[in-house]
Image (cartoon, rainbow over the protein chains, first blue to last red):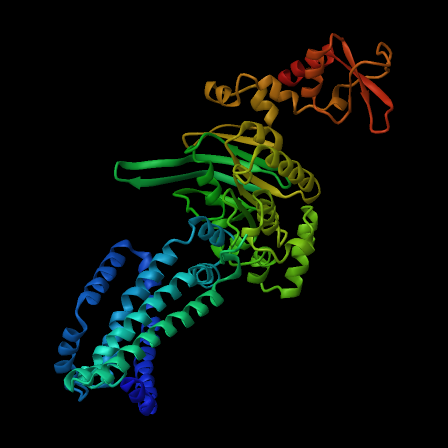
Length: 219
Length: 321
């Protein structure tokens, strides 16, 4: 009951924190798509490069986020942004790389070689083949990678409250330091709902952008 | 005309250089179908893929209509050559109309024009345009998909078609019917076709000339009847099979050996049509104890007869030619 009242009284603050949270995740994933998809496509050209990049990506994702923030503080202090929004975005962007690169790479690699052969044999240039055949076919799997990245980043960004990035994690960090169960529950609830909502919306988007001929049909 | 001159392709592997295609020279006239025939790994597909430069020759030259293809931009070259593959390779993200329209669109045709062309081609292949244009490849049967594959290759009416075991994945009944349709179409289209196959029956049926490959080399090159009647060596003889005489029979039409007048043939007994091949005549001779069989045309009129002696003489004369 107390928590409910807290939530009702703090709705504007919750909304603001949610927007902060979304801005960090949105910018980070946006940059990660713009970098990760081209990287994922580029590494299909060389098995060795692909192995290296995916290995680095896996290492990246195993670093605990709190440790990564710690590393970023001295580096970004040099330009006066040791804490706050910028390191949060950079960390989230780095975590988003692996799912996006890996899914793009796998999806492009799994395009039937016969289709590639047909496309080239019919007179498509490498770029035309990529844009008209490979990317459309790979799109559902690439978007699945984006979904994973978004959900992962909602979690990472919650920790970023500890370096003053704002977002919904603020309720949790304050809840802990002030032993205030109302703030703890509010933060946890809002984060959970945000993650579920984002995942659902992206799933809808994924279904919508899946080429019709690739969609699984009900018989 | 397509001319291959001393075409070779070697691959370097961990165990040294492997020659996939070894000094192949052959010529296919305009409007002819040449079947590249042989067991798997004999270099027939590599030869085909060198013609549209999906594989680059190690040495040798390829001329299409007198022009050395080495000097042509490969992307431009391929847009002027129809290409059909065994796996069909229809793009699953595109409708039938879009698949057929790929090369037209690459060449800058308008959407309306490429759609009209798709309708035309579907009608030519006996597929109802209204029913199929908007379908996706996963809504087609194997036979339908391969017909669309052929339509796609014909989209910009290229003079040359390359077909890599196009019908091999179909069931026998579908294969027969698509082969027949294709032959009927080819009668009017007169494309210059290179057709890879490992099936001697298909080759005999489709080819004006057969190039039979063994380990990258051309073992024999000639009209089907020549291969069947006079195999160049033991390899060709064993590849075409011990029943090669029976296969030759399918190359000869009843009208070519039939004689009139019709005396000596009763009003009853077995009969054939002048358009049948001699296999059906041979079968009738085995079934019935008769010396000759009546030939009856579409209208039911007796137009001649074909005798055991005439069939035997024909097989001998083809041999001696």
